Length: 285
Image (tube, rainbow, N blue to C red):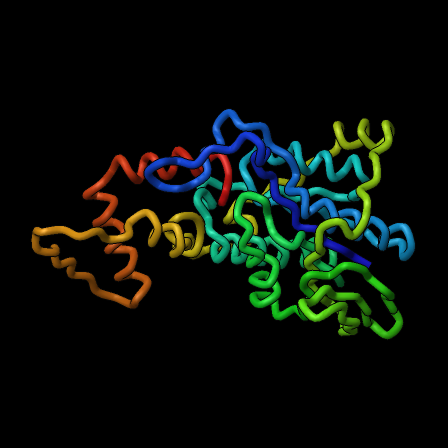
């Protein structure tokens, strides 16, 4: 059985600041940690490893420094760590992030075996959207179980999994076929302590590092700021102006015309583009 846990390196929420112009998180000089919600997902994966003999792969999209979080996951007991890192991912919103991670999961399946379960945390403390997990499931056509509080049973012979899901009206018991994507709730388990032996192994372990090209991403317009409509909309939201709007002529499909508009906006405000990339290069939203 192969399990993949998607983790994210996030700034320590006690010390974050928000950029006054772009409204994005300023990450320079802020200590980073593994997203706390992802630790519940990682522990649940490790418990399945203990009982079923599964192999656990930790996957993280982030800057090169995110390797620190992956080594921490190896210390806890993950068997393999994969870092997806590329400057083209800078500034990704949930749409672009789920696309990049789904491509990485496809390569993980091709190289190491298709995962029966993909775990994520319910959400991240620096975004709180809870959209990336379902976005991955949608792109990979996986059954998805969200807001899971407990895994009741995993039957490999029948290829099914039974879980408890927290809902507004109470607790639901759900069963579905594998493969599946599961988002774990907070406070559903207690993260184990890594042993000294595991810490030493993690320090020497190879972190598999892939770029956008490595995972087969050819259309870079789906990545980073260009593939993040929520960020572009937030930064370039129109305000009341007295002068006449400038006409931008562009040919091609909708994506090509959208890129032409973004290029024109960056041309008008190069300082904004530089500032966005300077903020985003340290971490991926």
